[in-house]
Length: 580
Image (cartoon, rainbow, N blue to C red; front, side, top):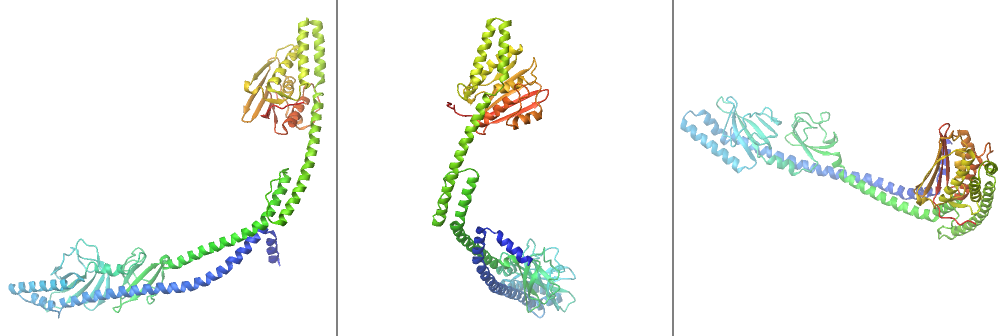
C-alpha cells in the first residue's frame, strides 16, 4: 500500500509537459527496445557463428601450410640421412681414408646438396653438424658462431628427429623466423653427425601473415601444449603452457582474448588470438546503429510531444506570464495569440479584466501622488519657524547696535532666502540656485553667531544647471551647524557625477550624530523636533526626494561621534521640469 501511495504521489507531482513527454517516449521506445532485444540475440548468434567459421578456416589454412613446410624439410632431411643418397655418400666420406676419394666425395656431396636446395625453394640453411667436434660441414649459408639447438623452441620430438620453430634463423645478420629439423645420421663410423635444415626465410612469415588481420595474433604449441612460438610474448610467454587447466578445449576466453585452436596430425597446434573488441566489432557496429535509430525515434517522439505541448501547454504558459506580469504591476498589452479559439477567447477576457485593474491602479496612484504633494507642501511651511523669529530678533538687535548697512544686508539676505525656500518660483531648481541660496543662508548665520564658517564647495560648471528639487541643501548644512560645529570647524560640499547619477555630499567635522538618532531620522515619517535644525529638515529632504524622483533617489547618513558627519544624496540625472 505504501509503495502504491508513493507511485500515486509521484504521478500527481508530474506536470502536464512531463506527462506528455513520458507517454510519447514510452509509446515509441518500448516497442523499439523489444524489437532491438530480439534482434540483438539473433544477430549475436549469427555473427558469432560467422566469426568462428572464418577463424577456424584461417587456422586450418595456417596449420596445413605449416604441416606442408615441416613435411618438406623432413623429406629433405631424409635424403641427407641414411639410407638417402647424400647420407650414403657422407658415410663413405667419413669411412674413406684415401685423399682423392674423400675430395671427390666431398665435392659430390656439396653439389648434390646445392641441387636439392636449389630445386626446393622452401629450403633455407642446410648443413651437417659434427657434435663431437662442434663444427659443421657442407653448409649452404653462413652459420652464427653461437649455433646450438638447445635453446630452440621444440615443436615435435620424435625418435632421432626433432622439429623446432618458429625461431630466429641461425644465419648470421638475419632475424627472420624459420622452421627447422634436427635429425641424427646413423653412420657406420663412430662420428655423431646430425642434419640441420631450416625452411626458407620468408616462408614462415608468409604462412603466418598471409591469413593475418590487424588485430589477430598466433601461437604455436608443441605436442605437449607448451608455447613454442608467440606473437604476444608479453601475455603468452614462450616455453610456458597455454591454458594449462584445459588442454583439450578448442576455443575459449583468456586474458581479454578469444582463442581458437587447430591441432595438426603431427600433434602440435596453432592458436588464433582475437581481442574481445575485434571479435565483437561487427556486433558493436550493429549496436551503434541501433543506438542511432533509438536516438532518431526518441527525437521523433519528443518532436511529436513538443507539438502537442505547443498546442496545450504553451497557452497555459501565456496565462501564467500574464498573471506574473500583473503581480509585478505590468499591465502592458503584449500577448501573442495561440491561434486556438478556446484559449484566445480566455486571453481576451483576461485582457479586459487586466485593463480594468490597470485603470483602478492609476486612479489610486493619482490620489496618492496628490496626497504626497500636499504633505510636502505642508512641510515647506512647517520647517523651522524659530529660525525666522530668531533672525528677525537678530535684525532688531543689529538695528539698535549697528549702522544701517548691516541691517540692509541682513534683511536683503533674509528676503532672498525666504523667497527661494517658500517656493515662489516652483518646486524645481538647479544646483547653481541651491548653492547661491546657501550663500545667503550662511551670511545670515554669520550675523547670528558672529564667527566665520569655513565652507568649501567643490563642483564643475557642467553640473550647475542640472535640475534638482528645491530646498534640499540648506537643511543638510543647517544640520551640520547645529551638531556641534566649532569655531575651527568646516563644512565641505562636493558635487560629482557617476554615469547617470549626481552625487551631492555634505561633510563636516562637528560632534557627529548617534546611530540611534540616524535610524530615527531616516525611518520615521515625522520626527519630534528636539532642537532647531535637527530631524525635521532632513525628514523634509527625504520625503521630497521620494516624491520628486519616485523612489529612485538615495539619502545616506554616515557619522562618527566626535569626528563628524557625512550626508550623501545620490540623484538620477533628469531633464529640467516645468513646474507651476
